[in-house]
Every structure is written in structure tokens, then in C-alpha cells.
Amino acid sequence: MTNDYFLKIMRCAACGADHPAEAKRCPACGERTNRKPRRREPVEEIDSPFGRRTDSRQAAALRAYRCAVLSLIPLAGLLLGPAAIVLAVMAWREGLRDPAAKASGYVVAALLLGLAALLGNAAGVALMVMGLSGGP
Figure 1: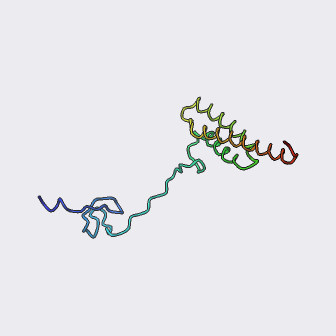
Figure 2: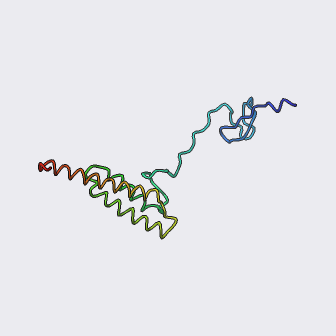
């Protein structure tokens, strides 16, 4: 067995080539081997429903989801809740017509959030009216 088997191999931070750990410079690019690795470039496409998207195939579903999240604001849910439900149904229908536009996760979330916001806000307003009128 040779000593080459136990050689420690490192990766160059500049070009990614393999080199022996004791090497002062990378044999491929000539860069010093003790320099810190470069930071990764930022990801171009943000995987967030609130980040900018270059892909507009799911725009209707994302619009419904955003509207549903905004409907969680007290009293705004009375208007935005039904709007989110309508937008989610429209996005669902668009997903049935065009499979590339299908974003069922956002559609289901928009439906559930919109419905919850509508019911919660309606119940809150009803309780406020009953409290102000000295109801049952």
C-alpha cells in the first residue's frame, strides 16, 4: 500500500478542482489554496408566495392566496374574504383548463383562509352589534 492512499484531497475555493491539502496554490487555476470560499450567488427565483415571480402561470392562484392572507386583517376580511374565495375558485377553474397553471396548494389555502376570515370577521361584527345594542 502506498502513502498516496492516505493523501488528503481538498477542493479549490475558486475553481472547484481537487488538489492535495498541503499544496500552496491550486494546480488548475493557480489561486492560493488557503483563501476563504466565495459566497454563493443569491437565488434568482424566490420560493415565496410574496416574492416576485418570473413564472406567471400560477398568477391567479398566488393572487387568491395573497388576498386571503390580507383578509386576516380585522374588518378587512369582510371584503377580502369573499374576494379571496372568488379568486380561488377562478384559479381552480384555470388550473382545470391549463395543467401548467395548477397550483392546488395556494388555491386550497386561499379557500380555507378566505372562508375562515369571512366567518371570523362576520361573527366579530355580529358580536359587536349585539354588544352595542344590549342584545341577548
